Image (cartoon, rainbow, N blue to C red; front, top):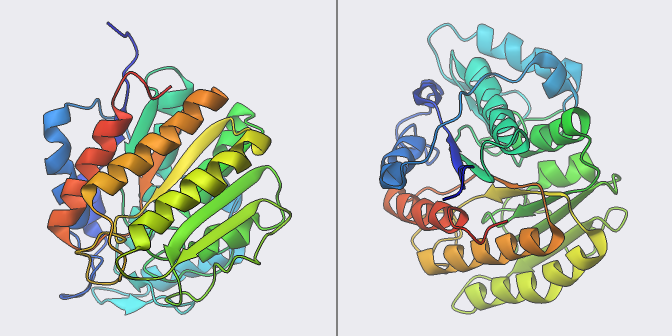
Amino acid sequence: MCSVALSSLAYSPHFRRHITPVGHPETMARTEVIYNALKPLKLPEVTVRQATLEELAAVHSASYIQLVQKEVAALNQHLAYLSTGDAVISPDSYEVARLAAGSLLAGVDSIMQGQAKSCFACVRPPGHHATHDRGMGFCIFNNVAVAARYLQSRYKIKRVLIVDWDLHHGNGTQDIFYNDPSVFYFSTHQAGIYPGTGHPDERGVGNILNCPVASGSESAREIHKAFNEQLIPAMKLFRPEFIIISCGFDAHKDDPLGGLNLTENDFQLLTKTVTAIALEQKCHGILSALEGGYNLQALANSAYVHVQSLFNDEVL
């Protein structure tokens, strides 16, 4: 019997306090339906916390952090959009966004301190569109970027792989690490949609690998091909010490925002591909963080098979 939990869960009911308008796809129910779906796995839950201002500032400019704080504080009881882009804010959004980022850091701690081998951070608002100085695309702070910098500063991890299989390209994550060879960013995403980035010729300093995929019946096959024929060989050279997954489930065939055709089985297979890389490279662990996914039933089902695949003896 393994004395270390194979996977932990980072979650808080306070994520519901980030309010979006009725009909908005990034609904308050997203994290709740996943949390309820994961209950049968009986995952140990980590104690979550807010990211400190210093931890956020490792990724975001001080002026942007202050802008978020100021614009949220001015809301009273209203909803609005951040002045930097299409990210809804409500009176508690600044605190909840800090909690989302900090939950990933608590997940990192649970792995690096030997309490678990992997962690799923069931958080909102999502983060991968947030750049150094701009919130956009439902995102306020870039959760996975904050976690990568925390791994490097707190635990002296030298090489971090970020795998992003969200429907949309994580332009913010790419922007933050574009000239940083210590972080490798790999993305599969639907070609030609928001935010209009993620072309194959966007290579950074050799640390960016974008694989845009056309919508339609061949999209799942093309995504698996990208993982097997591009990501796996690239990681033999990069040799990651830790893996973070930008885990969006909006590439599911039933998601209302996209045209890709992944199923729960595809997310399970992608998870196994990533965990095989972690095993081969002897990574310290895998942190998976929720990004998109807007059909609640598909979201719950996909998250379950994903976490169940992390939760097995062959992960690391």
